[in-house]
Image (cartoon, rainbow, N blue to C red; front, side, top):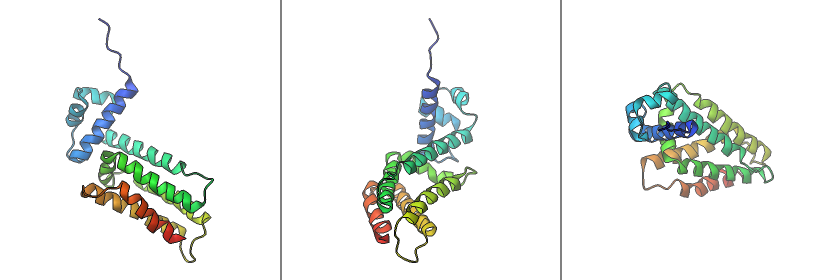
Length: 185
């Protein structure tokens, strides 16, 4: 009988997905490698073949989230008017967050870690700020401060969605656009 061949990249993703589910359900502080292994249906030692520690799992989850944010930022169509691109970006961000509730939920844990979360926010603010500088805004609006407020609106809706199952994050995309984009015209 020949040994079972394992797709290492696929197994790593399975473990990471299991970790995100466990972190979302239990919180990072309460989650253990044993929990991740059980969720993935593998032995505890197998987790360590792919990740050195629980912190490494959290960092990999953060990196995956940061990559999705980068992809979302890059997806804004440069051929449209800046505020229309901003509206598209807001809708894409809300959709990205809503499609992966577990990953969105662990963002709350990420805020208390040494990971470079501020860098992700900086990149997001820079992209929104650039769109706002291209647009014809009402006089007196600072693009950088306005970008911070727009991200705050998205994050505020995200937190409410995570805490209240009666709220639909996807249904908030258009109101965020109406207030944060149409209000700038």
